[in-house]
Length: 126
Image 1 (cartoon, rainbow, N blue to C red):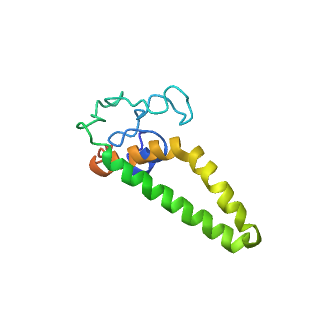
Image 2: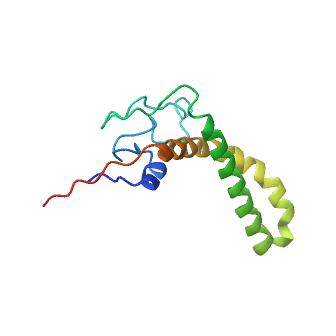
């Protein structure tokens, strides 16, 4: 049975309409050649995953929000549990954000499209 939940599609690289087809060509965000390659249409339902040129510019703002949220949470963890090691926060934040860039890129694109595409209705079998 297909998942037609927006959060599921964002987290698991699925089409926001049907919840079955893959959004990105590869499963891994850390594939060196294809981390950013998307399907133009859903392989299962045919939904257009690139509605118009420049559509994903809004995803830049979403990825920025993800970075800020991550940094605030990371900072609060350090302040509350590792205050004596606060210098390590400053040393570690840049490499961690660089490592998270492909992941946040993909999640932001899927989340941006999920805002605009309504999930398909589940078929009820009587």
